[in-house]
Length: 72
Image 1 (spheres, rainbow, N blue to C red):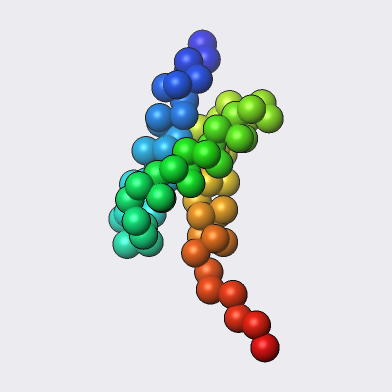
Image 2: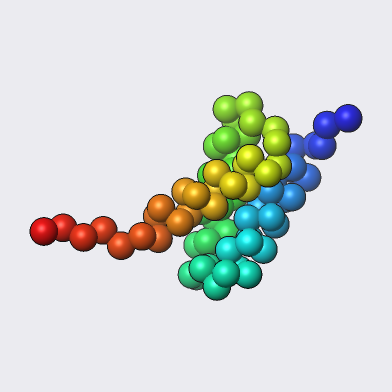
């Protein structure tokens, strides 16, 4: 049995949120939630339906976005 898409998005977001929050890596809550959910939704549109894959990819993308860019 597959999880309905809204529930899948919510589960994936919660996993990503709890992980990042537990490490103290969340910045602005509203922007963080919008970024994570947007990434999760875009992966779902591409056909991904595994909650852990969705959350892990969102976490990786969030962490990449948070890294400072140094230009020499």
